[in-house]
Image (cartoon, rainbow, N blue to C red; front, side):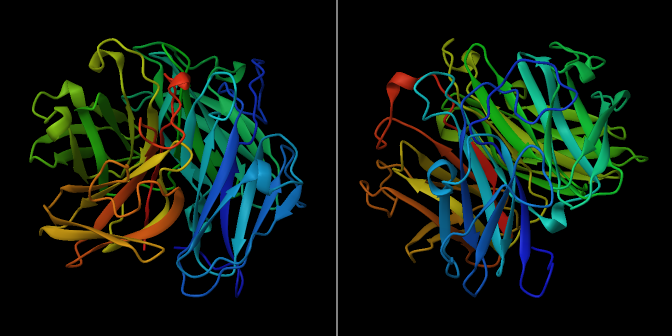
Length: 484
């Protein structure tokens, strides 16, 4: 997965928010998020190699530079094991603020960032997650299929990190859903190892349309030569606070997977957004759902389309059948995709519920998939690992925790899913119901069928630390698992 930088060193670039506050001012470029909240972050690192990993995390302030603000070195991570670094308490030398970070390791590692304001004594209480970016997934051009400006109350921001030791300039081109360029905006200079934040609500994006009909668009960010990493943060403040995040894409493909889609599944609804990032060729896109139903659309270069599950009467719905997967293919063009889901009031008796998250559609399936972080009765959170069988034959799927404990779900059909729901009241959950744990693991197929997976953390009554007084709130963290 990782590009080798020296004989022993591997690197991840990360965009890390820590106690970041919105000021409400209009900036040409920001060093802090515009999303409301008092944030704290945890970094989850899994050693996917066969030797112990010596890891260093270099944190960079808003000014970037060639010298980190501080560095942190956890204890060596044994092969197949993981570590959770809660930044506010573990990195004692780091003052409150928003930082970017670079992780270097002597062995292959993967990482994710989980950020929330749930520890705050006052609202808003929201959470989001994204994957650390391996050096092979940085590029001079980044694609972002879903960006918002007062789109049903949603706003978004680009967070761009220069992963090199040399300053660069960058430009963002924005396209409407038909693929027409609607604005080109200079993002200015991004210093060495610097990360800057660009909310669509800021003055430099005044040319972008807003509102329910036009406030949604794709973006392409291009640097003058330096490799970039990036995420998009998305938020809404009414009827309740919600925050989500997804990773930038560096290239398109002809096949994508959506392991977790929902249609009134315990009140959840999903939207699958596909963008054609080819600059010259139309993409004829087909979405094949688990129940055999297909959707098709043709996307012009840079055009995007959102497949909203409740709008498709052919899709299953409800608690028994409303959780499913999809395979997305294209003839011509090159596609990227992401999924957003929430519990909208119209599916929940008019009640406002905070749950909201985005994840990247994985383009690569493998017989084994790394799961960097799972929570079982852990600080008010539990985990559901959703695994999609992308092969053509039914398979048994086994989740193996880093402790060696195994959990198998048998007979998962082609294009079907297995849900490893780690709640205390799930009889098949092999972890003790009172055990508070944070573990990594691997999911694998019994007959080498290719798999993809997403990891979802949420809260529920019956989980240790559940706090009904903070509802409605957004406890939902979702991120994409990594092929092994």
